[in-house]
Length: 632
Ligand code: OTU
Image 1 (cartoon, protein in one colour):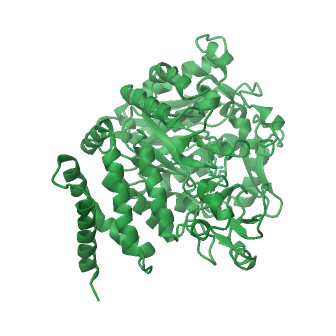
Image 2 (spheres, rainbow, N blue to C red):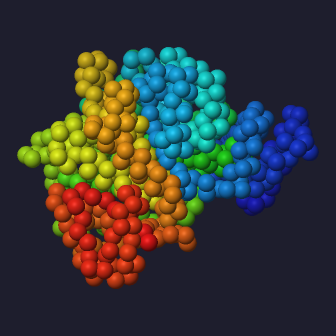
Image 3 (cartoon, rainbow, N blue to C red):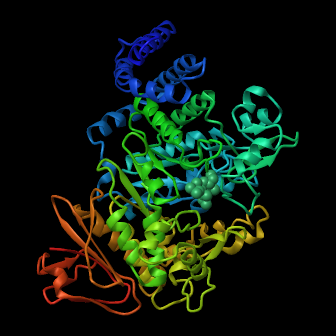
């Protein structure tokens, strides 16, 4: 019996000799660096891979194949990206800068296609964007594609959007303009039209093994006893039936089939797809639906330990073959689980769904207790990682706060979510919000909410506090620590778009209400201060400029700043260069913060957003919905 370190040595030697035999010259300049990274990272990859697949006979053979894929990918990697790899090695925490401004859009909805998106680069640059996430642009079924999250080929672009060449050209142009390209890696499932899926559906045993397919209901029934329904409007449970009578796992829509990562061939194939994407010039990949990638009977099949091992293994492959590529986690789940994916060796950055959801919660209740508790207890991160703070994504708002946190404050999670859903879908008297419910599940009472920021803050309803609430939420996302993420179109106050109701394959998916086309009319008004669009645009420009000139907003460190007022959120952001106290009034009327709360602050501070000076020794009164970034 070999010890694991002997095994590692033997397998490394075997891999290197098989690659050399196949013609790899590790003395060449290019491959010497590959070999260095292999030596550094393979031990970890070996550990992860054997933890996942060590009990299989083909484990070593699969590892050799995986490293061959990595080597080929490195050899294909364009020089400009290898240069970026070296530059990023020298500045690994580049994404923590206060100069980072993220934005996302749909290629077709914002610009038409990838080439036309090039014309918007000057605007993005002028706005200050440094990170652009394009919603999935890959080949997908024509009608039912879940907004691109049902991928039919990871190597091809949806034909109406352009080609992979266009992606590369755009990535190059963005890079020249200091903007990183972020793309989705939809790796939990493929569409039913993916070549693998078609072969599986046709009964090919090799590709049937790429998915979770069962001949009868026994296993599906057993699994469904413990897994939740994610899109109950689409189908009950987690399985759908194939035409030949077999049952296939589809966590999301019936045309999105979950990949079977207990099969190492799937891991290797997807590692190849990931590296190919990295080589197009993508800086960061958004790891979609990370919680669902490993299934184990008798569990929720979410956030299983192996899900982390898989992500770490993918990450380790990147360290060898696409070293500058970073991962963003998309886990919209319980806050304990959200943070479990964030690690320099797993996902370096992550959506911050808790801060997002609780900002909306505080806006509805005018009470900051839950938000304050989250900032105190649930924002700390590894200093080499970062949150992505957003007000709205392309999806619904799920109320993913922890029931146990709410209970500490005397709040009943279930009832509170019901209130929030009613409030934001305009079923609560006096609400300023105009959202639409999403995936109401009568069996559990679960529901989520959709709508644009303008619709949910009261701008759309013409509520007097709308614009200020809008700026309040963005003021938090832009200062709370990490990368702020703008939903492009929000900077001019885009409104809900109900046209999805006329579109047969979208009508039942209310998330489309919050995915409007580029609002050309509002963009035309953006320099006119007499318009709502103009006021919001000016406000967003102020936030962006203030953030870019505030070194205190770099990194993640955040500490609560007690305000003694349940309507006013307070937190302190601080680096060696600057300390900033953020104060945000969620009430509809002015609120006082008494003098005693400013004992440890400088007596005179300036609001970095507006330049207004504040003397705080005797306390201050904050107007309704006002947010201040105070610094001396
Ligand atoms: C993600 O969202 C994407 O953001 C969605 O647009 C996709 O439809 C989906 O994956 C499938 O690819 O349920 O409502 O708890 O973590 O993965 C959004 C589930 C979702 C979430 C998330 C999912």
